[in-house]
Length: 602
Image 1 (tube, one colour):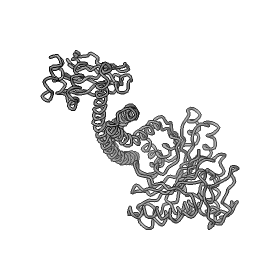
Image 2 (cartoon, rainbow, N blue to C red):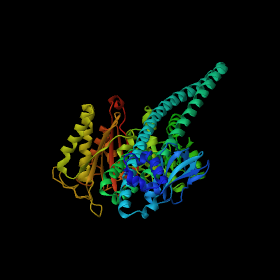
Image 3 (spheres, rainbow, N blue to C red):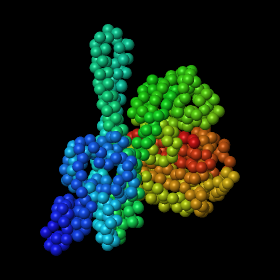
C-alpha cells in the first residue's frame, strides 16, 4: 500500500487497512486502484472450512467469489472429481456470479482451508461512481482470467488430440498384427488335421500363438477403452463447458463497458478455436457410439470373408452373427431382428425373403463378381438392395467397405466422399451453375491434384470421369415438378444456366492413397433400376436398348465405372443424387482390378 496517500489511509480503520494489504498480495487485485481496493476490503472477510465441508454446492445459487489463502480444495461434477486447486489466489465461484446461474460444480475442502470471501451483492451499497468503476475493473479481470483458462484448455485439447493420433497408429499396428496372427492360427489348425503325427508339437505351437493373440487382443481392448474414455471427456468438455461458455461470452459482449469489449472478444475467439478443434472429434465419437448398438448378420458361405468381417467389425462394437447357408440366415432373422444384413451372391433367394420376414433390416448385397455377372440376378429381384463391392484379393479394400457401409447405414447419412478417405482430410467444394463452367471446373480439379504430385495418368482418368459427371448433373439430372427431364433433350453444346433449385456441388480431395471426385445434385432423379439397365446394355453390347431420350444411352455411366477404381452411387429418390468416383493414387493397386461400384438407396 506504499502508493496510497497517508491521508487516504487514515480514513480507514486498521482492520480495513490490514485486509487491503492482504488482498494486494493476490494477483487478481494487482491492477486495482487503492481507493477501490479499500472498498473491496470492506466487503471482504476471511472464512474457514474443514476437511469435507462444501464451500459451494452444484445446483445452488451463489453470490460470492472466493480466493484461496491456504489449503487444498476439490472440484466435483456429478460426484466425480475433475480438478484440485491449492494455489494462493486461485479464484472460485466467479462463473456462477457472472452468469447469475446455479453453480455447475461442487467445491469441497480437502483439508483445513482458509479463503477470502467477497460478497458481490454488497457492491450495490457503494456510491454509483465507485460501483461502476468496480464493476468495470472486475469485468476486465474476469475476461483476463477466462482467456488464461481457455488457453490452458486449448493446450490440453491439442495434447489429447495428439495422444488420440498416437492411439490410432497403435490401433492400426495392432490390427495388422492380429491379422497376421489370425493367418498363423488358421494355418496351424489346418496342419493339425493334415499331420496327425505332429499333433503334440503342433498343439504346443498353437497354444503359444493363442496366448500371443489373446495378449494382443487385450492390449487392443485397453487401447479402445482409453480412446473411448478420451473421446467421452472431450465430448463433455465440448457440450458441458465450451458451448455454455461461448453463450456466456456472447452475453458479456453486450453488457461489458466498451473498454473491456476487446478482452471479451478475445476470449470468445479462443472458445471458437477450441470448439472448431473438438467438433469433428465429438462427431466421430457419436458415430462410433451409434455403431456399438448395431446388430449385423453376415450371410456368407466363404470362411475367408467371414474372418475379414470379424476383423473389420471387431473394433467397432457392432454385434456380428454369421450364417453360412441361406437356411441358417433365414432361421437367424426369424429369431432375431438385425439392423443390417450383408449377403453374398450365393444368397439371392434369401435376400428376396428378407422384406417379408424382417422388413426393418437394411440389406446389402456384397459381391466380388464382375459387374456384368450379377446385373441380371439383381434386376430379377423383387426389390432393390444396397450393393457393395469386395475383392477376393484385396483384404484392406473389403474390410474398409464393410466398416464404411455399416457407418453410412447406421448414421442414415449416406452422402459425402469423406467417408471413403482418411479422417480429417479437407474436402474442397465448387458450385455447378452453368454448362459453360465445365472446362474451368475440371481445370481447377486438375490443378489441385497436379500440385499434390498426382500422376498424369490418374489426373487424366479423373478428368474423363468428371466430364461425364458434370454432363449428367447439368443436362440429365434437373427435372420439373412432375419429374420430367428439363434439359435432357438438348444438344450437349447448348448452353444451360441452372436455377438455384437445380444447382449441383462438385467435391474433390485426396488422402495420399485414394483420390476422389464427386458430383451431388438436388434432384434425386437417378434410379437404381436405371443404373442397372444402362450398365447391362453397355456390357452386353446393346447400348441404347433402354434409351428414352437424347441422353448418352448409358455410355457415360459405363465410362465412369470403367475409368474409376470404385464408383459409389448414393441416391435419395426425388431429393438427392451423388456419384463418387475413387482412384488409387498408386496405380499398382489398379492393375488387373475389376471395375466395381456401390449403390446406396434411402
